[in-house]
Length: 444
Image (cartoon, rainbow, N blue to C red; front, side):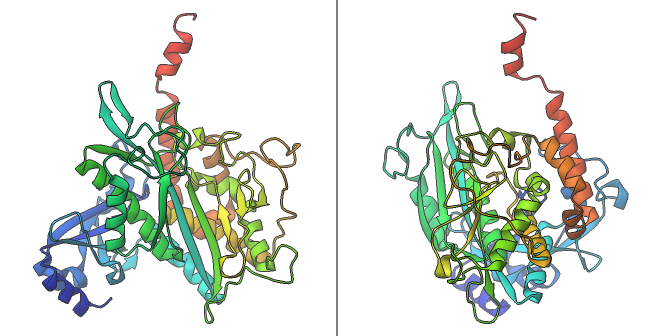
């Protein structure tokens, strides 16, 4: 989209406010709103913000050794909007938004998740490949009850249904309408396995577009919930009674010139190309390290359980939901890899970038994933497959040792992420929980 088209839309739709957004390390939307009559200035000069926002933890503390706080005198960065992300926000009066790219001293900001993904995509493009991705995001909706938050709908046992019983206020229908207006190619939505749990799907696209849409989707959900006195959460597992919420990511690689899916090979017994096998092998090779980005909170690891349709062991299979990587049955244009390890709380840009980095390493080194696992990997692995890291602490240690991921991501982002998440682990370790009091206090 160009500037003149944007200005025409602003005039025709009576837009009075422009919001410029950018994702932080958590994937949270940070933003500023400006009068739409400043659109030329917004496009040319962007907005400024302190770099320290990339050191802000989820409890609002400032992470130590972030590289973006006192180390740089809390200096500014500039966010220049990407015109291709312009869209009207249908639930806010007279408001449009754009996602921005971050610069410091006219250079791409080294800690920007969006820049990281763009760098990785460029490496694929140099090989004549275009990464394609699709998101499946699960989440819970809660409402305020007499004793605190309770599931929005008493929908236990209504898996794969849509009805007033599972969505009494029609929130999911509203969400669908808003997303369609914002340019999403919506496929479907449904109630998931547990009470108040839902999943939303939209069509695959180029990887950067898909990351932008996943980022947008989560923020739209948060804002829509607030406007209706509801609480949307993408926590990995928000309660003991609830199951996990995943962020299943589908990948394929198209030929940059022809658009042909390079993952299909009709001569192969599984219909899979050597390129696809190498891509899978790279993700398997780096699974232990990249899990820190796919499951970025201490809560994320409460999702990794046997028989929970989340990975417990690191293996791959054909249309097998017990594995870390699943290859759906479809072939032709739909030939693809599904990475099932990501938690719904993951930053979409970091999740896609690290998965693509891992796949690219497999391609460059022509790694072999071996034969697909057949059966129930939860029960039949016989010690041949490694566990998924079962804590954030272990994932961070694995990330520290993964030279490929460290080199590709870069030390500024890696060091800040490790520092922030190590502090989070320590805060969790020293916090006394209700479970501990209930379990130990009477007897000990």
